[in-house]
Amino acid sequence: MEEEQPESTPADLWGRVFVAQEVTGTAEAETLMSGVEFTVSFAEGSLGAYAFCNQMGADVDVVDGTLVTGPVVKTYMACEGVVMDREQWVGDLLESQPSYVLDGETLTLTSGDITVVMSETDSSEQK
Image (cartoon, rainbow, N blue to C red):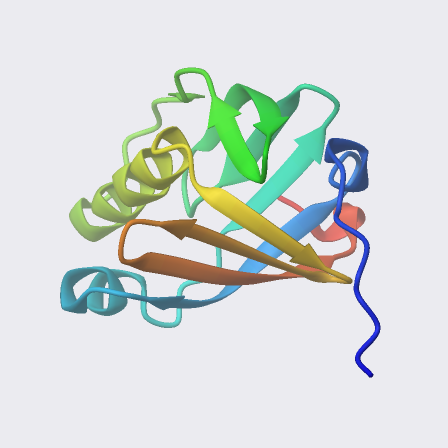
């Protein structure tokens, strides 16, 4: 008989940093994000993201397995074309109210056809 895993709570995310390992779902997303590692960090009531050039952040509530974010704000350093496209993609993902599953050190975000598998990383490694 399989042992049931306890459901994660919002507090299980706070103070943790995750790095993207795989993006699947649409050809466009897979092409744009293939091999790209971006980070998402959590503090109580907020999240941060680093996606190649600019820092991003938003208020976040965790409700019924969904990340309910406020508007994502970011710094506005000038970055080259594809880098800006990737940052926009990450911001759009976070604003889409993705569902999440936390399984140990693996965080999976899902929004529509898109799935992002992330693994926990040492917070001191975050840019």
